Length: 312
Image (cartoon, rainbow, N blue to C red; front, top):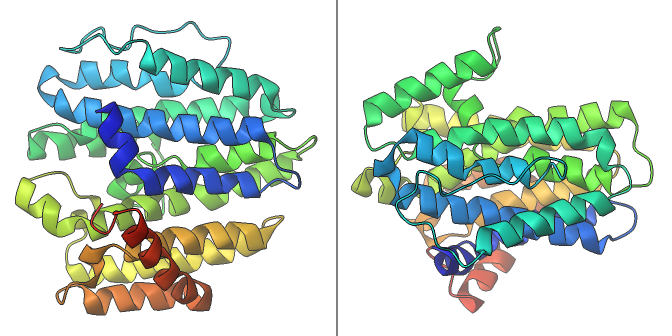
């Protein structure tokens, strides 16, 4: 699972690393933190899926690592307590400790700590995503969204649970924490820009390019919750345009725009997004991303070919 996540999910690790461009000065501790945290995220996704039969308690226990990694004062948990396989040679603990040490080196970390820990707690929704019973899974995901957001929200329950299945808001806040100073207003604006819409967009794009594969395997697909493919495409296009508009309102907005457009182009550069059945909808999503997204698409196709990631 560890080697597979490193090999198959390299694009997601690179995407997390991109957030290191946001601060005015590069910070090696931030880069180490972003990469290690994404590796944990991808590794746990694989481990949780493999042991889905062990139940939700196992998934929740595994994903405590996402919380521990961002809270240096928190005791280390027994992540494999309910898992059928326990021995990983210290791999997960080592990644968690890299994150904790890197957090402690960020000058403004205490200003965002509560927020990123809150987002990491919400990421335990990942434990529900691999439930083998689709009906039970969807009921639990909707119940989770209703508990986390008891008041009416513009986003639907599956858009909210999808948003917490991606870590973009955490990455953006960690990037702010690497600045010597960051204002409360900029922290709040950044969080609103990345949660739920940018994070939900990441989940929807991931499901969009994998929808044929997910339908064949029976795996959970967030984009399949939209009533029709046409409505799914419309909503994804709206999310892309909304994210770009929100990015323009942030400090260093051009860097946030680069991250968003790179994300859209990376997903749409996958071979599955170019099949005859998906070509028209892919073209519409690409158009919503604007000229920079269109310029990045062929570059990222070449990256996929060079690194043998055309279909992953």
